[in-house]
Image 1 (tube, rainbow, N blue to C red):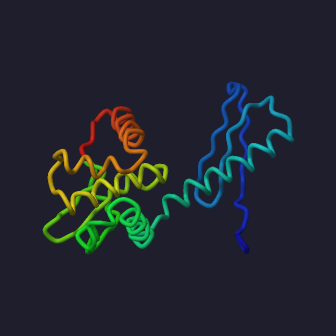
Image 2 (cartoon, rainbow, N blue to C red):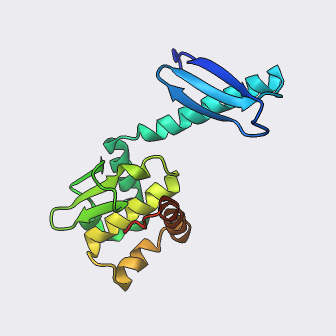
Amino acid sequence: MAGARKPVVEVRRSQRRRRTVSAYRDGERVVVLIPDQFSRAEESEWVDRMLARLAAREGRLARSDAELLARATRLIKLYLAEHGTQAVPTSIRWVTNQNGRWGSCTPADGTIRISHRVQDMPDWVIDYVLLHELAHLIVPSHNDRFWALVARYPKTERARGYLEGVAAAAGAPLTD
């Protein structure tokens, strides 16, 4: 990225750390925690690696409503094309007030809302959640016809497993 500045990095070495490396943002600086026995070359390698991971994570968090619409448009063309405009939402957006479900759809007005909790998940999980909600524009209930539409997405079972794992780890199963 042209013109992007490398952030100020503070490396903290720990005698108790043996193998793990972690990093977090503290204001304008990035703190990287590494084992004390790492060489300067290993330190440099891990700082670069952790900066890349942070940038990737922050890039995912910056996903916009416009990107969500573009992603939905692509999914409609791939999996729901024969349903024409019925599968096209009137609006689609990220929301922060949905902690009990991954997404929601109001078929009556064609609106779709996707929980901000999904924003930093892998693309294939976001695609599943989106397709799930798009399918509700065609079939409002979770009947066999609905699940047949969702099953067109090749990573449906994998994404459902991922979401179930996230929900279990959080200690609160989330609904569709």
